[in-house]
Length: 330
Image 1: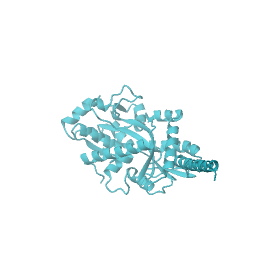
Image 2 (image 1 turned 90 degrees about the vertical axis):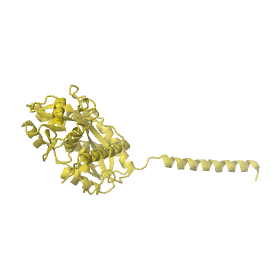
Image 3 (image 1 turned 90 degrees about the horizontal axis):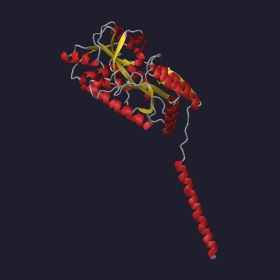
Image 4 (image 1 turned 135 degrees about the vertical axis):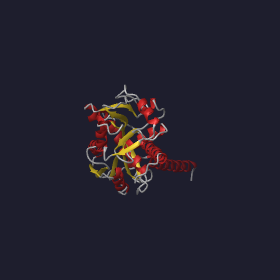
């Protein structure tokens, strides 16, 4: 073999080896294939008509167009959202069943000792849609004109203040219990089977205050039956800049609602990332921003990891509140 041929053969071997390495490297960096289920169900663990249901139906229409499949909404209410959540936790792990839920997903789990699922381990947090403060409201004829006066009255005599909520383990109850804890006081909880009953009694003067979403109180505010004393977010709401925050009176107080999409744990990561990307694109659309604004909410653009962290921190926070305030479902 002459030297020229030997050099050419060596160069060819090196080139082939380099090409193979390049192919292998390309294979390693190529995006994983995403298999989109042709039919998806988004479970709403609450009755039709609420904010979760409304958001789910709007999202389903837009997401279906982006994924090129069919998406239907299925309401599975009961047990504060636990019935629908349990159904989703046991669903196939192929992405064909998702869930649209809210902060109540974590508050309810904190007070339910016998759940058949775990908030962190049984679900994949996929994408967050929006976030919103709640409002501390009193009846139109209430003697309380500001939060400072209300809280001062609550400190004078434990149990004197009573508040209404949508039920045991609701975010309304938990937000009020954080408030009581910050005052080193105790308020009397009056649970109802839904916010409408609680707000009717608030307007009638049968309970002192309610902490509720702007979506739930909007009609009564327009009807001049309620007054907002403060919002629960750490900063003032851009929609109501003149309304103070509870934190201005009780430093550190912070409770915000969120809405998001979750799935049974184990859904393929490429599909999770694809749905996250599409949801983030959808919530940034002007029409969606306008719809969120009607609920006094702002769109969120969290990554999968960021939303997972939010759900985990929320679950830990509410579990601690339930333990400290001795809140357990009967």
